[in-house]
Amino acid sequence: RNLYSTVNSTGRELRIPIGSGIAGHVASMGEPLVITDAYSDARFDQSVDRRTGFRTRNMMCVPLKIRRDVIGVAQLINKTRGGILSQASGGDRCRVPASSPRGNIDTFTAEDLQFLQVFAAQAATAVSSSRALLEETAAQ
Image (cartoon, rainbow, N blue to C red):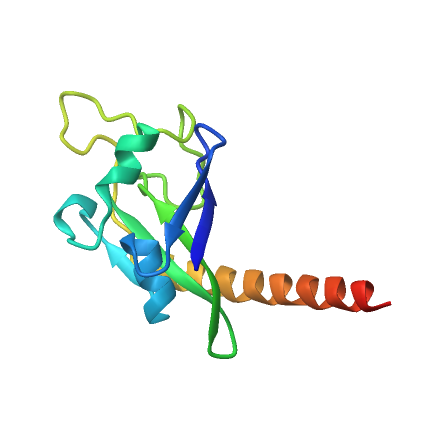
């Protein structure tokens, strides 16, 4: 089984095996993770950054669950000082000034995690409802 993701900067689809990388780990374990330094975490798959040209600094990832079944994951990458609800300037790529090792990068908080978990619960319900409707329509 795989997770499917679209890279915002390229529009290309990535396939991530369940259990591989941070998102795959969250999908297989069913528990959220907050990673403050992606490159220092052994679960982080650096090859995704190499393939996309993106530089992951930190991330937060939560499972999308229906009852106890994980149906996907939601992942936020590179929190900026503006917060998770603000728009970062310069698109979705992380641009870090040479004068600062972390630039405008901030770390995810417990409040950010709570927000993403609420979002994930709503998203999982929407996906489940959509699947049920598709199955019902196909059966008719």
